[in-house]
Length: 313
Length: 265
Image 1 (cartoon, each protein chain N blue to C red):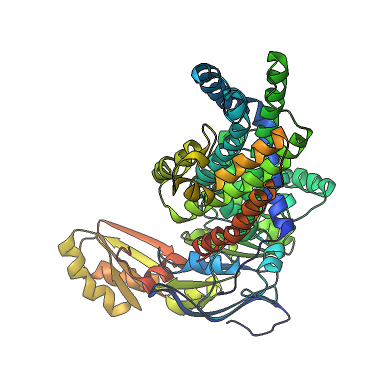
Image 2: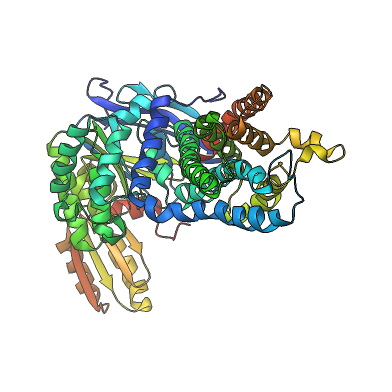
């Protein structure tokens, strides 16, 4: 549950709204991010996550409600807020005319960092994101994962209190993604507040202390990953795969002993607290099941339960 | 939100400084065309066409002497116009450089002002190099092209002239969504200014309303300023300088507001 202690909260939104020419991208959201935590925004495309992020770093001005970042009003103190946060954008916008280290040094000047301090931080940050060997490389020679790490280093050049990351690992291969996760966890250990958006449930589950799920410009659920799973789905999942007819005849059997059942294209998902009892019943029913998978319920189940299985576009 | 946005000098300086950093890396390879173009005009028109201009030239000057200072002004116009159109568009819409800058304590308005200053700087740099060449060429050929010490004021004036054309170019940039539209700007604005601002012939001798129309255009005054400073100014130059300053100041904040609205949703 979201608390209301302003001493520990560094980001507070109240009935925050944004509309563009009649289209309401964010329809009134409330959230509070505590100092030092990793806070996630999950949601399908078009849910209003990026718009919310942009309101935090001043690229979009709210059309209604309140938003305070580091105790400052986003409408009145945009420069001061920007001085105290770091931003990792969704799209790569590194300066291609500058080399890797120069990107950090020139960025440091935007914050008026003294040259010596900027140089020292740039070297430490390249070390931190494992790009020291690429310091003198051109930006366009970097891989996608390296560019993302450089964006993270760039966002840290001003030693920000809050780091805002919009889909930090989208488009990265698994190795690159794990490295980014590892670095982001290191930041939370240092005490930085992270605010991120993601499509990846695994990412949210691994990194976020608390998160909100957005859909259609509204927050539809919030809490820690574990609390969300506990609140919205039963802890165990059995996935039964079979032909369409068998699945239909299996359905009433499963429904009788499960907390809830979902049908996907080729499988029946049963959520239960007692998988053994369910398996027993399915075996006894005599319906032929090709394949059964047992797993723990996860954030993805919560997400799909709340936002639906249809494709949202 | 409705308030007029005014740039911060500090932010504008940082944006200007970024451009300087990059220019210092590449100036040797990018300066050449800007530099050679006015020399081509000077050779083709000043020497080529000039040979057919009757004895006595224009206002007592040979044709090449007449056109050389005007080319300083048009060179500044071209430098600042390219900077504030194609170069700015690429930084803004394609490379998303400004998106990155405005997440720092630098605001959109500072970015625009920094780009004005940079375009002015670039115009002044190219113009100064060209001025040196004109001076040397003139004395070497025995037909001086720059004859007044007042010419030392040409570089700072080229900075102002560059800023003026940057404001115009940035205004156009702030209004368009496709890079192809610059063809309109160059064909309908820059080229007519280049041809009808008194560089190649005195517009004052045309029947009305041509001189009157010319008076309301920016390059006309820039050409007057450069020509006067190159040959020894009369007090009339103050009117041209005042015109340039007034026009620039009146227009400068307009692209700032449009870009701000375009970049901050």
